[in-house]
Length: 383
Image (cartoon, rainbow, N blue to C red; front, side, top):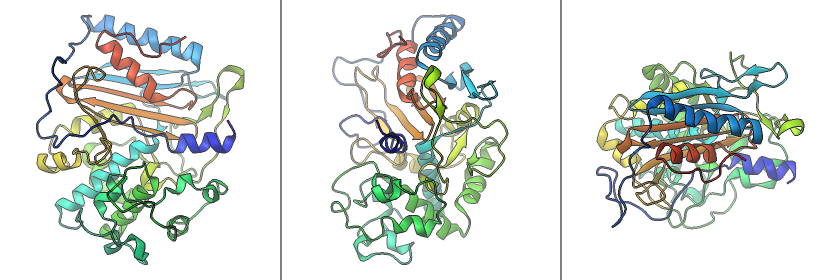
């Protein structure tokens, strides 16, 4: 795979989405006939932790996994541990407080900001994008905020454009970034189709700045991070000194190398944040409360539209493959990093995987840990 193709694959590393829809998240849908929720593996907490650890150490040794993993039950960590190195050159190990770029996990924070502004009466999901963007192409007038949130706008995603891939290491302003796709025709009538789209979430960041009169990162800090005490999460500007920030890599063994550089204005509200597993557990637990958003608004945020994608979250409905539970999940990928969060509310289970070696997908690791939790064999065990 060429470096360009690999970069594109990483940047559009999307959430796992299953077929079908569900009408509301207000009441968890019942599993299909004959499918019952699977109980957790009958293991003592220490034995369960050891089972996770054995799997992850094997993955690290044999497949090059590097990162930090947190598995929590009822908000309390069953496992919180780093594997491999945060910095290969200095041989610094990963730890629960290591900061990783989280790529598209950023989208759930952007969607929360939009929903909070909706609660304040400053944003309408039904409004045209052009209410908030100047100048706005005529072609974008039918595109609503809802379409941006659900990847159904029809606006081409800039991370899929060859012209963008040629210059993604060069600093660009927000307006220059929009220029990559501003004059392109819509790919379909808004709302009719789904395709994962970084342009939509980039534009949602512009809406946040327009409505609040603040930079995206400032609004994020004031409206989400500070209220939750998420002091180890923020916008990952390359020039900023961020203690305990992991470096990103690709490859295994002697083939490991530094990931390609990227101007961090470019992922913006679609994928520019860093965080830790500990901070993301704070985020997860806050979503059980009304600290950030009333329950009714959260139901709107978690109601899928097309392809089981809601607002910054994929919703997996109960099935044998989901062990009979509803999941809320999202993955993320950005040069040298991958990330995954899986929330299983009815089981009070949270799995967070942050990796700084993009060769091993965090989503695959998270799914294997979920299988182990329910007493099943991993789908892709460490070799």
